[in-house]
Amino acid sequence: MKFDELDKKMRIYETANDHRVLPGIYMVARIDGRCFTALTRDRHRFEAPYDARFRDMMIETVKHLMQCGFKVLYGYTQSDEISLLFDLNENSFDRKERKFNSILAAEASAKFSLELADVAAFDCRISQLPGRQLVIDYFRWRNEDAHRNALNAHCYWSLRKDGVSPKDAAAELAGKSTAEKNEFLFQRGVNFNDLPAWQKRGTGVYWETYLKDGENPVTGECVQASRNRLKVDLDLPMKERYSDFIGEFVPACLPEIDG
Image (cartoon, rainbow, N blue to C red):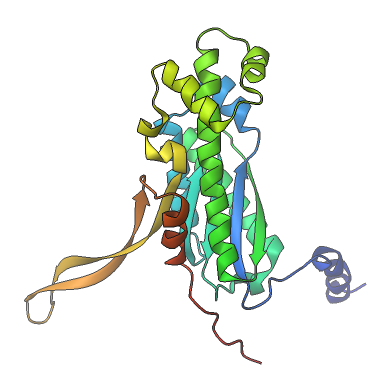
């Protein structure tokens, strides 16, 4: 069998699941750490429940993903997860899901491993969101999940640091309401509202425009040029204010799709 015939025959098995995201559909990637509990607790012993070193490694990974070849409008990270909002017209690899998933997981794994100086792995999935409000709802969901996780984590680790076993700590918190958990922390000298915003709401990364001083090579005059850079936001808003904030990154209406 000639090579061209063999190539055509075998490529069918590679491309059988080449699903493409339709034009006019928003894409959001969620990238999650694999087995990060053991990695961060047992092998590297990061401070619990939150460690600024780990946070910064995740932020650097987000920044890398926003500059690795895709047009990403907004990046968000909490705990060991990352969410990326792509430009509506992002058309890399003909919008093949498997390419986005494999490349983003690989890029995140490589970058975080370099930051950590150890092997770390991420997986990736793409959410296909057919409307602007769903994009806003997605990021609102992750923002509120961060808040819930932070409250639970601070309660749990408050008990663990007092010598309570993992099983007993989980049992003591089971069934407690949000108000009860806040009161639980308050009685232990922790006002949850005073904790750093990045722990309770996650961290946002997005592009901002700034003016850079330069010199006109012809006239020698001082000039200012407009440039873009990534901004890290450790003080994200919450609830409706966060929804409004996310709305700024999402076009108010869909562009017309060429027939």
